[in-house]
Image (tube, rainbow, N blue to C red; front, top):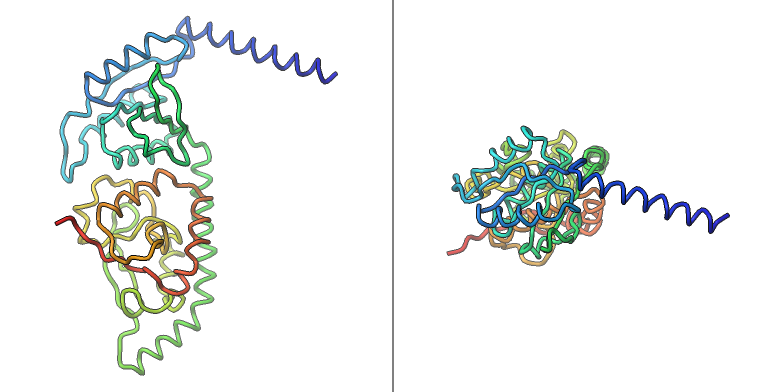
Length: 320
């Protein structure tokens, strides 16, 4: 019976594939595609796509990425692209080489995951082959595809539940240590806590509490920090909580789609100083790679830094 079952399964699959290819040749069941790039490159890619019916795509629009830059270098065509996706029920957006910056691609990928939308980045973006992406072939050109992530909403809910559980747990653990630290600081005549204005979810400012100096005692003595996690101002793992004074340097707002973290990639390494550009690229990598499993790995790896207060605040440097 097993050989017959294998033969039946193989024959059934072949029948389905042939039927689907016939539907594609008759322009039925085509995937609606939008291309982002300069007109010359976008038109060249459109010709390649339309010349191969087996790909099963229908190019319904081209968005010119050379239409100008807004404040902070942000590409102004993003609103036009989002409107086209909604108007024509686009299923996949393709970025040609050099269309927009890596950060702007990360910004759109973050949005696309919520909208259950495929995103394909045609090489030269070799440095963007990451967790949620796969290398594929598109009309004879190497490309990087971000497939629609149907688990995204569930993973975000799991992340928030984990934040509440860990936040409450750290609140209980930190309460006696915070009280002892407060008494110690009072005896020494110093101030137990200070605060600094940072940018949080949606770009809204919030006050980040710090115990002692910028990289002083363990986070375990910082009970107000974990309260921010519980109420949703912060997450246990996330992008760096940028000072509000740096808001003009941040460009695309994809990093504000995620709550800033008590820890994250930014807490790894030895140096406390970092170039602003490096930190922005690090945030872009985190957003493109984001998954619930990745957060767990970061949390476990950086737990010693949480316990001992290492690199809680970075000294940001700018290119001269």
